[in-house]
Amino acid sequence: MTTILHLGLGSFHRAHQALYLHQLRESGDTRWSLTGGNLRPDMLDTIAALQAQGGAYTLETVTPQGVRSYTRITSIQRVLSYQDDLAPLVAVVADPATRIISFTVTEAGYYLDAQHHLDLATFPDLRADLNAVKAGRTGHTIYGGLVTLLRARMQADAGPVTLMNCDNLRHNGERSRGGLLQFIETLGDSALLAWVLAHTTNPNAMVDRITPRPTPDVRKRVKAATGVDDPAALMGESFIQWVIEDNFIAGRPEWEKVGVEMVQSVQAHEEAKIRLLNATHSCIAWAGTLVGYQFIHEGTLDPVIRQFAFDYVTDDVIPVLSPSPIDLAGYRDVVLDRFGNPAILDTNQRVAMDAFAKIPAMIAPTFHDRLARGESINSVAMLPALFLAYLQRWHAGQITYTYQDQAMDPATAHAICKATDPVAAFCADLTLWGPLANDERLVQAMRTAFNRVTLFARNHRS
Image (cartoon, rainbow, N blue to C red; front, side):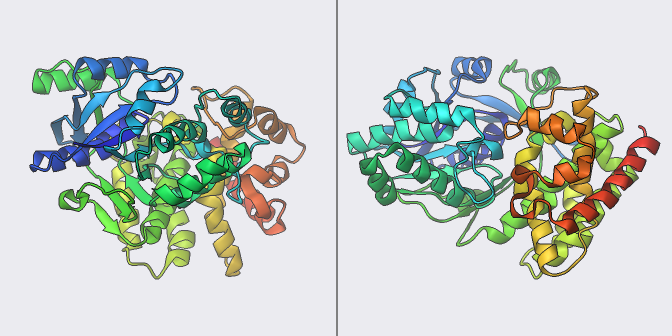
């Protein structure tokens, strides 16, 4: 049997890629199976639960109309225990039967700056990982982990392998490959660099399914509906999409038989998803938090917040992405309907995180495109203005949950909020804005937007 090794056994992978392979196996094509493990000691309880169940678990899905369905997923045939030396993962990758290594990483987890360069100056954990690998120890970032695994495959002469992203990074295959090659170059490992260039590919991909962190209620509903008490149960929306660039060096499952779109280029789908869905999601999370909402659907169903999101897409995004093979206005409406699904109970806390990576990746490109065309940026400016107001609440200790942001330097963020002119300080931040930092057009649009946000937050309590 041919193996896909997936790094990161989180909810999204188990509600998305694992489901597609499960459906293919259920159709009678059992040539491929999944093996899963983690590069870091995360989700140990979930891994233990999956191991006790032979890798099987139950997925609950729910439509915007509240119809729930249950699927027992069995495509993960092996669940690997975490070890600091990654020995179980190394053994799988050194096996020629493993043909794909897939991974789900947050935007910040790639440690790339606005020019797509490895940002060693900003991230001490990346520097520590680089030093560990140089000293012959195991790496635990995506790059250090892949170096450890790919060295083992090269030494075992196990043949080529595809490195497949399953996440929201724009141009994810190209950019993660660039980061990996830079990491290897910095190590000075010319033999591994040559091997990776000759024996791996990194297809770009677009993935989509809202998958909240599982709550105890999911387990209770699964038991009531199926009779199975499943500590690894999870839930997601009924909508699902996967678009992959068909660039596999060592074969792949016939995913197209179960609805995956295999294409020459994912760019149009990727831009639509990142700008119309991901950026809008963050907009609603920041705005909802400011007025006291806990869940995404609450903000989406609030007419003022929904209008912020609608105007951002309609006024500023659709014009710069047109013409498009996608019905962008129809996609916008589907996205807002999905976000308004009250059964999902997706939290603002989950969606609001990592803004210092999301703004440059998901929102700043629309600023660049609009300004290059000499057009207004008033609607898109509302999104970072909402985050600045959110950041000020965080600075004052007034966010009711823990804000997580791997790309944010807390000292810098506090300094922005303490500045005499927070808007100017925010617009000067290179991590957020890159070459747009201090651009007067950005500053003026942000001042207008921030005044609107201040009035909104003051007058629009939930």
